[in-house]
Length: 257
Image 1: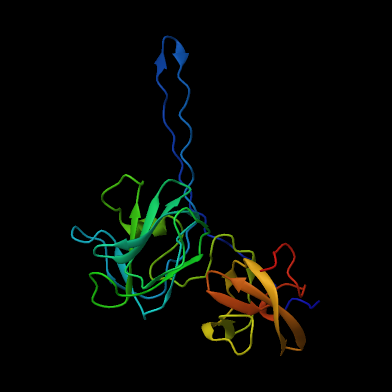
Image 2 (image 1 turned 60 degrees about the vertical axis):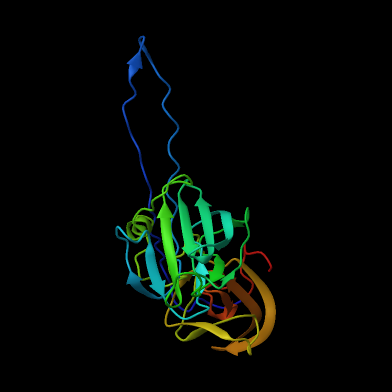
């Protein structure tokens, strides 16, 4: 056990959709009110990078460019309804979210999810590529009102309504945030090993969602020793529990990986 290094008050952006309407009276009785529309989910950053093309009449989504292999994450919780190849995209993924909307991801070189798979917000689903009709590695991201829509809506506004502004940093303010890292230059590694590749470096305290934890290499730092590591899907890797702002070495309420 260790003492917290610093108190931290977390606030999470929550976007909701509310609908209200008058129900006409017929034959002296009120018709039953329609069921309320599901609330919009709280969004997650789909990928890091530079916005190179926005939404316009000739472009149904937004393009976010970065290096080949850059992780791509689900914008929110939902079910994968498409994962495969497609003309123009090379490879693509579609996810139907719990509010009925659909997000679409294209041009990746590697897909990590399959049809009918349930995914969480901020879950790693693919890696950026340049397949199909593409001039360089980027994510083409679209947002649709439903599975039957043929034209996407403005994905910048769609994400903004769910608390995400582009460009964005994956793992920051991810919905379901349950812990905060502390310290600077905290390395996120591909596995719970000190010689594993560094996939991210956190410059300061970051709100994160810890999906699971496991035993790995013993880490000695800041006067503590701990062999427990937390897997953070929004960051695509593991962080030593020494750098998770909680007094317990093994985080309570988090399953083993």
